[in-house]
Length: 463
Image 1 (cartoon, rainbow, N blue to C red):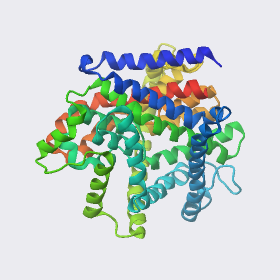
Image 2: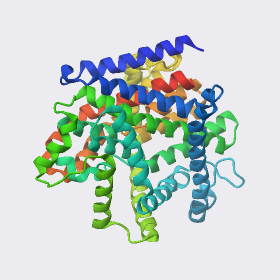
Image 3: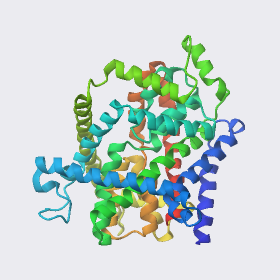
Image 4: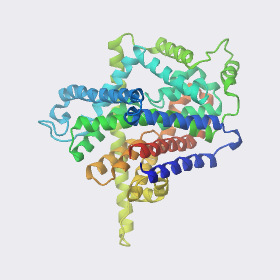
């Protein structure tokens, strides 16, 4: 047992909570029962899903969650193999996995972007069949009972494990206009601290491939490893998001009265009082408004949505990577006059290196880790993950750093997401658009801290 690693991990958790406490809008209102329960739930998720095999040596049932989690990750890998069947029909050998017979190498547009399209189609089918609603309701029930948070915020944050930051609030659409400021902060933070399922699948695809090529293992084995880690990061981020949101913007009205107050404000005769009822009503309303008519329609609608997302990802990467290259060129030219070299990543790395050290990143990599976090916040996580993939391919990072970076980058917390949430959540409650904008930077901070918290725990357990 590495007591130094455990000690730095505990120091990191305390440091993250201390940062949030220092920036809280009302420290006296912080519900420490919610905070402690959220941290405990995050630790339970991490231990059961990431280290359940060790617990099974003491009591075999403790290993069942880990087995189930590994099986789900295996389904992700099998899904990626199925995607290849469709993408090779369109792109030919460009879409073959690197290392496969006939493969021409790694082509992002042909190997990764089709994953987003197919996953969106599959998720659309699962929602049409009502399967995803039941899963989200189950997670929300656990979170709400454990943390004592309200039904709407618990449900929205739980939905963020599977869908994006603008889709998850749709399940609580009738209630957004009457959420408390703290609940609205929790909804926004949930979107910042997690990533959409289709994007997650694409990260599994290219990170697993890069790692496999360096480690000398099968691509499927590399993808299985990253599938387990990214799925773990997504689940752990839900309670972490609520913890940080409730510290930064504490609840000022009794949680038990939140739905009652929402009922009075909205002038409704009745309001559902449980996450399950809330999810059912919202899902029925959404399906009645514009839902697909059958499974084929659901698949087609999902594929069309996935195509739009894939095109956005491609355009975003081209633009941001080009802009970063231009900035680096200017910085390097300016520093070169004095005989130095300088890049945007190196500046961000130096600024955020103390944070990296605090949460337990190996000292040799704290600047590189800080640069990845800075890139994620200023640009986005896709750009940061692409840089992580390059670092993995170059073999320049410690294995523990790779694990912690994988967890720390697993969220939409970046500056552009403020605009995305204003545009996505604002139309659901136009009168609260200004409030959403005012909470934007705090939500980015809370989401970033939530991701760093999951990375800290992962570093202790897996590093």
